[in-house]
Image 1 (tube, rainbow, N blue to C red):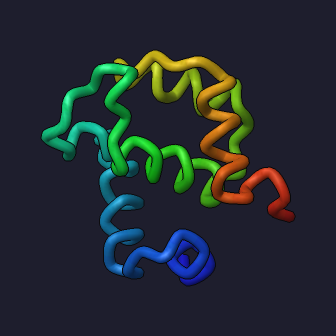
Image 2 (image 1 turned 45 degrees about the vertical axis):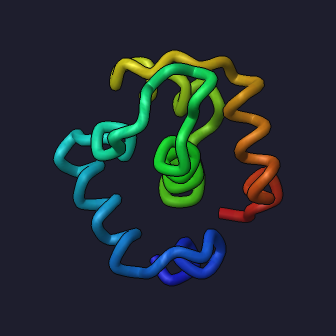
Image 3 (image 1 turned 135 degrees about the vertical axis):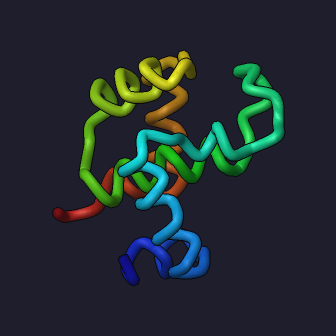
Amino acid sequence: MDEIASHIQVPRSTCQKWIRWAGEGRTLEDQSRKSKHMRSMGWFFVMEIVVLRMLFWWGLDKIKAWLARQGTFIGQRTICRIICRYGLNQLDH
């Protein structure tokens, strides 16, 4: 938990809230009031991918499938770009 919070520079309490929401089947995108259109990906959407990658060490296919079940359809290339931007392709789990 602390590793996630320090790596992406968000408060620990925020990470705990995201984990609780994930356990309830809610997504961070559901909490955002921003448009869910592909071209207007918000901060919450990006952080959702970051948390899934760091917390569960999911691959691109699994992240894409999970997001699709939540109603968000994006390509693996976009997910990969987000993962690389935050240096999560180098994490050891």
